Image 1 (tube, rainbow, N blue to C red):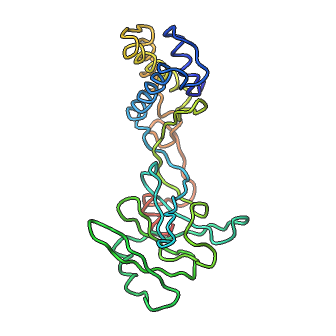
Image 2 (spheres, rainbow, N blue to C red):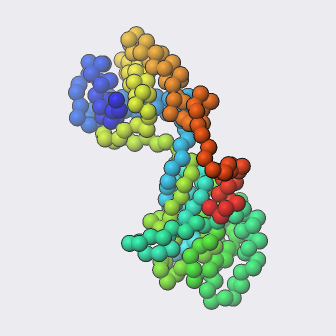
Image 3 (cartoon, one colour):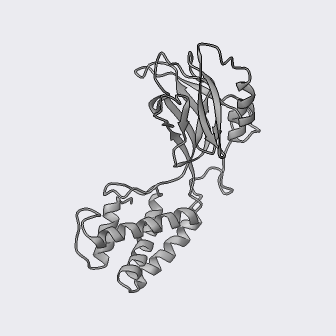
Length: 266
């Protein structure tokens, strides 16, 4: 069974014989319990090596018309595997692959851009204590990009006739995501249903110690039991685990995901 954050807080407050609440921020104690749950959640995520999962995301726009080809990788993205950009209307999107190039390759391509071309513009970026000028085209959609300082994405072009600056809504990325925690009544922790009991019992045990200065032997016993079970079964749904049978169809790919993406223009 999976619980919302409010349901977890209510269960723990009930165990502590504290006042009932209808929202996590209703009392100082209920908010403290929510923060205890947050700490225990990240402890579990780290202990179970669940700190990354793959998924879709969108880039953050710079919001600066003077830097239209600059975008940012969201803080919850730890690794980019590929990026795409919508080269058509928002009503009928057509996401095209944008090829990753290294900083060195990007700078090499810069040398081939004619700065006097009317379809070429430039902007400055501060890097490593200095300011650098980059050129880009304004008459077509992007075809390649590079990443500076781990989160700044610089593209080679954008279509000024379509938009003033590259926008979040037109971007699409895929990569490794770091789970977050939202202090909201309706938020559901990103855990397997079997791991919820571990989160509940460890949060209950910690809340008793920190907020009541008391032990909860029952919660401690259940927490130990659930941690053992969770560690034992954490790979049950992972097809790459050694105890799983998995089959390969078609030609095998000899490259890692990032290498494959770069070699194939993803």
